[in-house]
Length: 374
Image (cartoon, rainbow, N blue to C red; front, side, top):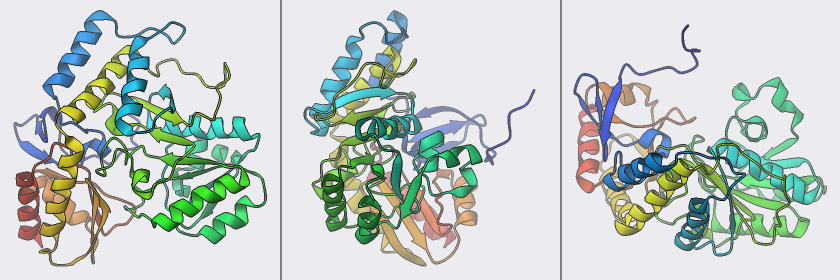
């Protein structure tokens, strides 16, 4: 038996990791400026994280959601306190795709409608409704076409208004900063206008914070910069620092009904212990402040790069857009300089999503490698 060959793989086999470094089976050290798709928020193998998960698995790793789990309550309280999303309700699942799937389903339950409005160049996951709301036809199977999704350009309020006034839409889903799409973000005027249109037409506003949440942008959530209040916030990735966990924060005006949502593994004891540890480390080490400080340093260093068109994103969710395709450059960074970076739909863009523990010295290491190849 062999693996189903769906991933083009780099010829590297990681065997251990520590903070911002990954080590392969040949003993080579790599600087991780990608965090496994923005998953590693507090650094690899953080001692508090390792202890929390190890202690929990020695006591109780899993039981079903048919019984009480005080760790879920603790996580909900800590999350709303640290994020500032007071009184929001938490539903836990296992991934970002599941978070968006449940967000869309909940919106349909609440409104009784079936259409969704999403944005061009978006990515929301690979489950049925989430992938239908993703602007990437090559990953949308014919089966997913049963979902009715309209797409408009990010920033096009008139296009949003035209679709919503038809009265058939249950939800608008938006990445405030597009991840896979290439780090695009619209204006505060747009996001506030979008929120207002949703209220006007009785449509639920879903902020997809799967990649941008958990302090990555310097705010706990990217939407907070724009001073809006979504109806549902989806989260995952940095939430568990590598342990699979996702969830949705639900506005207090939305009332739960038994059987509306459900999950077997979501919110299990190990996942909750991992996420509680992430929140504690973020607070103890003031990692959101570090994200902003290192980001400012990154932006200054970027000014020195030849061939750079612009830096996109904010905090530690950044993209370097060049005036050439960067595929070969990324390979050189990996194989000649031992630095992990990410790609995007934009072939000219390098995505930077490091652990929030990254230091200025690591940024120096990255830019020195870049300059050597440019």
